[in-house]
Length: 114
Length: 112
Image 1: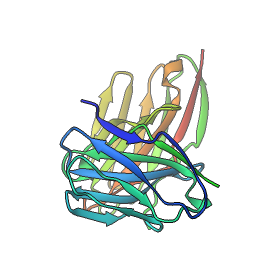
Image 2 (image 1 turned 30 degrees about the vertical axis):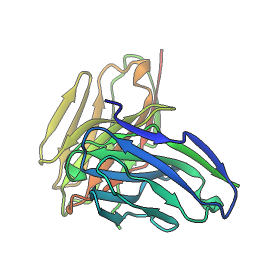
Image 3 (image 1 turned 180 degrees about the horizontal axis):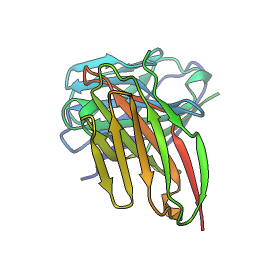
Image 4 (image 1 turned 180 degrees about the vertical axis):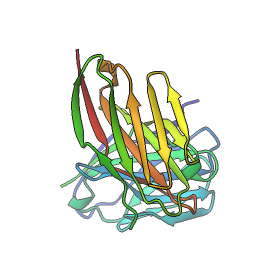
């Protein structure tokens, strides 16, 4: 199993550009989520999904969209990148609903918005 | 807004020392408490998931306890080794089962 994979590993954007961060898992996990990690802030939940076709907002959803058309994939879209979205983004998945099951994290995407 | 506090923010110990960290969380509507180990340039990896008051979990030299009534969990490392150097995160699981609220972590540095 590859586990949770994320692409790209690094990305530099200009303000106003859009892009999609990819996340995929091959463990047949129902629950997937996106976090951002900023210095001194810990991991903050952006969006999550409890299954294909179901998504919801986390703590810091503004400026991001998600969709879950398959169990395996959970892309995160930045609609119009802003410098405040410079961060490291982690995708995670877990068996069934998330909070009583350990989360498996991807390797992260380091995003810089100029 | 749910708040998860971890202390200390960082600490430095010598090889062979035993140490412990604290995670404080809301004592009402408890659902789950997670501990993760996060090494530099890697992804967080799960250590423990605890769901019952009084839970005690152990993995090698690392153990954790849980007190849901007073809202705290301790992580213990016995005989610290340089490879234990990492940031240790705790996370509180909401009752809806949909979100984890992470603390800011305790960064441990172990010198040989």
